[in-house]
Image: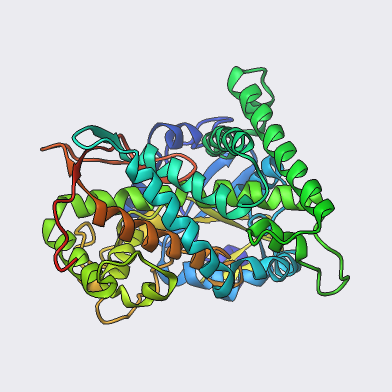
Length: 450
């Protein structure tokens, strides 16, 4: 079949000279993506950068084909390329054989044994955070979860390497970097070169993070100690072909990208889960009953997590209804067939997990929060909480472990109550997160059976 005989890919309306569809994305990115699903077919073309076509893949089967079948032959595309420019070359931003080598190099930091060692830190940091919430006061839940996720990340990576002053400085700088990456990924490249205060703030914070990590690497290498944290695992990692360790620059890039890719997403999922539990006492009661039965008054441990089946379904349903990914990219390296279409080399591809997980063709009554839709253990082809294929998120087990540990710790200690009549809506920046999410902290009077 020739290119001329192929069915044409429709182009989304509203593109502007130079800006393309960037203005619509900046105004209401989730609304714009939802309009594409409502008004166009399996593929639709938009413009994010002048002279570059981006094809949004909307059919679930084609999304899986793109990620799994075509995954090894595709580059990661603009989103990840831009992250690499901003944060450095890492397993998250790399593609092809380079990605495979990096993934193998870092795998030791994400094995079940390694993750089991992190659970105590996850639980202790969560308990410390909850202990600081004043009962009867209003809590900005998403802000609190971002702080908790940052604390967990910094402590699991640097538990035996940084003093308290360095911890606080690194946490502050990482927060600035996280909030700035999303805007820079979506805007044209020339914007970040403008002498704006936000650009200078971002550059200073990024450089400060790399400097702090670099000093920690130098000290730990010089000491020869194994502190049991993720930094020690990264220092011990060796390339299977060359036998060489990661350089200081490589470790800095991996940690920076891990912070940006993992911290905000985990914080958002935790926030949404707490919001849904607060709105649905019957779901919360079932979670509490399961925790009482499984833990019998003990603190949660790594070995307990597989037995928390209902809480796992709550997390799974949160990942479906409130997925944090709204535009994930790939790029064709050669002429590539996707379904009925043949795409030329250099075509940007994108898909939206947030929209895909709300597709009524995949999930009946998709806007209803229903953990029991997962009680048979099945998973529709369009459910991609951590992506799929060779580029599936390397930190998926770490994230699930942190989500379960944090929720199991929080809900046993406090009851969060939402403001009556206030509906929290999603906002998409670097990730999809809840808008202003305020809830009142109440003491948990008793836990059934606890």
